[in-house]
Length: 313
Image (cartoon, rainbow, N blue to C red; front, side, top):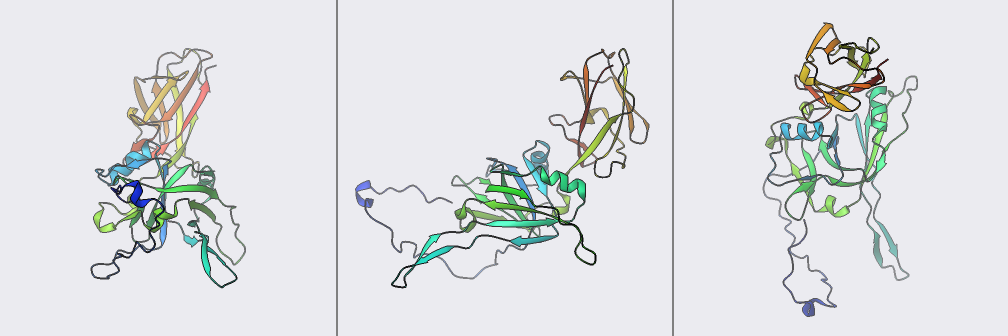
């Protein structure tokens, strides 16, 4: 966290360097130790997302970030590797060593979660697209503290899903690693905070993750029809049927304008019929999983996202 504003006059500080000014470090070891374990989880926050100091950091809050598209949790990595660059030094002819460059933190999380997960992971490739909140194997979370007392994720640089490693007979399982770097060394050294598991109302496996779904029209939309028929299955296996969808879980639109179906029914497991105004030839209709404000449906505490469009014939 940044130091408080100085009250010294410019005349009293000009040409003055604070050599050894930080001689008041408190290095006593009494009290319960605050430790952080092996990173295992990562929450990617949309760049610039700020968590106000008054925020109740609970499951509902994180869920709201996920549903609004501001947070993407990557949970339960199979392995962690610290690939941070080391500090670099130079030594002059007199043998005096000087710090040239402070290395930046860079971490790697490895996942063994199957090909649909790997495809989704690839979408996260970029540079300065996210900030990061890191979770360890004990359910503790680490994030950056701002000078005004609010919080944010660690300022992120590149995010690189690495090449998927194929299984070799007798060797390790197929896997894909996610590499990411922090750009602000001070955040990691000084301006950070740890939220310990004992202070939270949730454990990592309760964090909401968005499951992709495939929505397919089971009948081609035809002019004058008053029903739209479609199926909904998990995209992870393109087979598991999503049941218990209600009218509040579906968003229906015509040429981008949202309309409200008059009824929804399930003809059989995973297959649905919505009753709509008569379809008009040439119009484009879209069916999507939805919540009140977002294209993310919450069905019995599980989040789903997906959509499909078709032109009325």
